[in-house]
Length: 161
Ligand SMILES: [Zn+2]
Image (cartoon, rainbow, N blue to C red):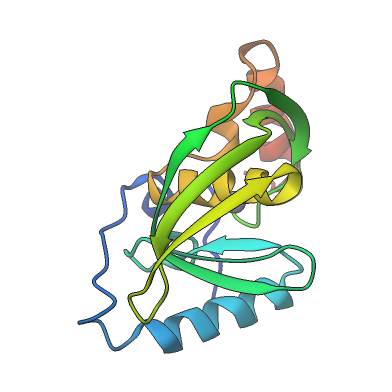
């Protein structure tokens, strides 16, 4: 699959909920997304990044591939940490983004089973980043105001826009 890059408008849209019990395409979608994520050396990928309007994410932190449908953050720690994040859809730059250190995330497997993930540190960051994609939010939108314009300039230079 081809990864869309900013400023593709698809990346700014709100993705549609999926119904795992009725959507027979999810297994193939997740397999293709995982393949793309590994090819691009990513640790997470959201369906809108490959032009698919579905609330589906894949991620692999600590050599464990997982997929989640309709993921929602139901609890987020007040405790936040700033770290540099990259994004396959925003190539060539990193952005310092503040994220909750711990989150609780609910969603469904592609078989429709409800699951709850308690995540900390990198996994918590990846989940917040990928769920942002489902709402049309990119790391550029999360950049601190005082560095946003220089980051956008660097992105344009890196990608000759
Ligand atoms: Zn991303």
